[in-house]
Length: 501
Image 1: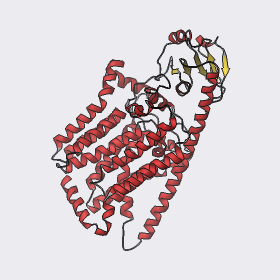
Image 2: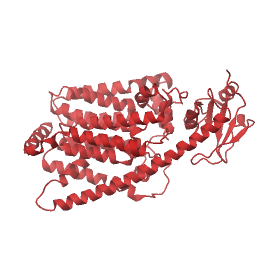
Image 3: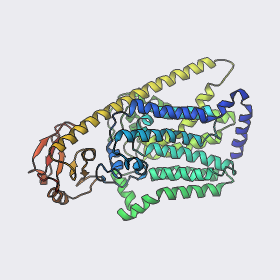
Image 4: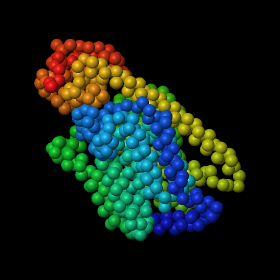
C-alpha cells in the first residue's frame, strides 16, 4: 500500500499543469491560514479573557503570582512547561494570550507542514481552515490547555509516520514521528497511547520496509513524553497503577459510557458538560458533527476512486477515530476540547472530499462550488456566533472574579493567604493566595491544617447562598461578596489573622 501511495502521488504530481506550480507549494497557503487563525483570535476572541479554572491550575505551577494549586492525578505538566518561559518574565494575562496565540498559529503551520509531501496544497490549506474555523479550536487558541497541542502533535506524528514508511531516505521523518508522539505524551499521556496504538498496528498491516524504525520511534517518543508523568506517579501516588486509579476516580470512574449525545449537546458553546443532563438547545451548532462521519467517508471514498492518497486518508481517519473513542465511550461527561486531536486528523479527509467535489468538471461545477461555499459560510457563521458568546461569558466571569478578589483584598486577605471553598482556585490565583481544599478531587489540606494556617495568615472560606460554612469557620466573621457566575449570595468567612511581617 505504501508503494501504491508513492506511485499514485508521483503520477498525480505529473498530471498537475505547470501553470499551477504555485498550488503545489503549500508554504504560502499554510502560512496564510495559520496567520489568519492567530490574528482573528487575537482581534476578536482573546481580549478580556482571564484564566479559566484548569488554566489557573496549570499556570500557577510556574507563575510567581500565586502559590501552586493542587495538581491532580489526571493532569500532565506539558502545558505548564509551554507557558513557563513567559511566566518567568511577566504575570500579564494579555502577554500570555499573545504568546500562546502566536505559538498556536505556528503549531498549526508545522503540524500541516509535516504533510506537505503527502497531500496537495489545496487540501492542506482547506484542512487547516476547517480545523481552525471550529469554535472550539478558535476559543482554545490562546488557552493554557493541552488538547489543541495534542492535536498538533498527533497531526505531525501521523504525517511523519507516513513519510518514514514511504521513503527510507526521508531521514527527518523518523525523528519527527518520535517528537510528535513525545510532544503529545507530554501534554496528555493517555491520548498519546491512543495515538501510538493505531500507528503501531499500521506499521504491521502496511508491511512498511521501515517497520523496525517506526516501532522504535513510536516507543521512544512515548517513553520520553510519559517519563515525567510516570516518575511523578511513583513519587506522589505510590505507583503508576495507583495514579491511574486515582485519575479514573476523579473523572467519575472510567468505564463503558455512551457519551456521543453528551458531546453533541456540549457543542452549543459549553466548555464542560458534567453532568450533561441539559436540553439540546441549539441543534444547528451540531450539524457539522452529525455530518462528520459522512463527510469523512466521502473524502476517503474519493481518494480510493482516484487511486491516490488512499493510505494517507485511511490512516488519518483511523487514528482520529482512535483518539475520539475513549472520550465518546469511556468518559461519562463531555468537554468539546477533548475531541480536538480527532478533529484535526479528520479534517484531512473532509478537506480532500470538498476539494475533490470542487475540481473542474464538464457540467455542474458552478452549482457544486456554490453549494459548498454556501454550506461553509453558514458553518463558519454558526461557529463564530458560538465562540463569540462563549468568550463573552468568560469575559463576564473574568470581571466578576476580579471583583471578588478585590473584595477579599479589602478584607485583609493578602499574600501570604489561603482561599478555600467554591471557586477557590480561580479566586485564589487572582488574589495571590494559595488555594486549598479539605475535601473533593482537589483535596490538598486537612481541616486541622486549615485551622492551623489561620493562626498565621488570613484564610478565607467561600460559601454560596444556601450552604453552611464548615464547623471550624462558623465563628469567623462573614462578609458578603459579589455574585460569581452561577454562585449567588456568595459569602467569605475570613479568619481574623493578618499576615506576619
